[in-house]
Image (cartoon, rainbow, N blue to C red; front, side):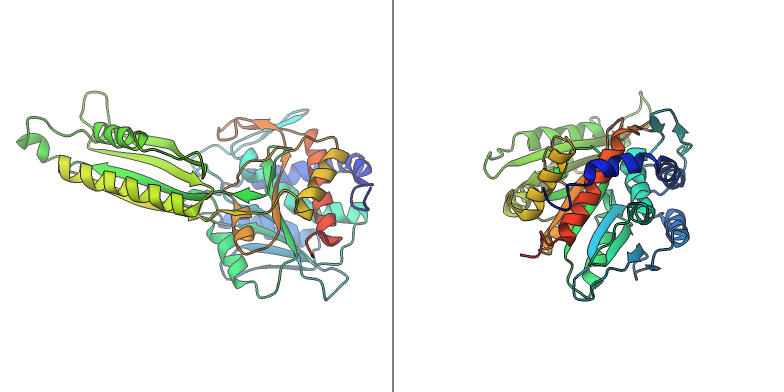
Length: 385
């Protein structure tokens, strides 16, 4: 047993006594809408709560990422980052009222990422209650402009402008408990928009339909040969277009992602899709635009990296079963800068991207305990080799 694992089961019992604080922070965060690029109200709340909890320093960086600093005992040790993205996939027009049940919390965005931010806000009180002290400064960072077209701008700017070395990092996501992300695929996320000039409808017998043209785009992309090694895939995620059933669609948009564990393959597939778009644009004489929304480079820790091994040990101590998959989150930016990091989930839930998403309360106590264990492991030196 390591010093950072032997007390974890006891932590779970103490964390249960702090349920009201953790739930309050989660609900307060979640009920403030924060669509990407419009996170300011949630940022203000984050800073206000951190100030109330008495962190040593509470500020924002030049990009307006809110940051709380808990000073460590050693001036020679680099800081440890604990981060959670602030933005939510839901717009301000969506009802953000939360319902707290006996063992659940339901509401838009609770699993992406209100619970993660709520736990981040609760850490100063949790450290105090558990009498936890660290050699390194603990940097609690809520990062803005993360998901979708935000393209991880918040964390990119924060790390680019941070002037000192960073010891290691833990990225906190609401779910799923048991996830252990330590690698990221290369990725390009893009949108293809077809716009047909309505004037063509009067001059042509066979007027082009934007939805059918995107259907042809999909057909031609589906015909591309993707290798098994390097592992590569294309995910069609969104499609929208048209106004009503009996009218030819003048505009439609398709959203997709290209993923691979080789950056060169992502670029090659993106080039193939660009050629498909150019060909169909000339064939149908329509406006067909390919826009790159976001991208990230492939990066990874080894499975036998001390941080990964430590977290696996922490999970086993808490009787959690780890599972791994690539993560398109803040993790990729830490890893691309050679900073050891993992992404962990707080609890279980369902309906992640639904307005009635629901998280389970009881599992989160083990979830928070294993986040504490990861921070303690980094402070004990597992990332220092």
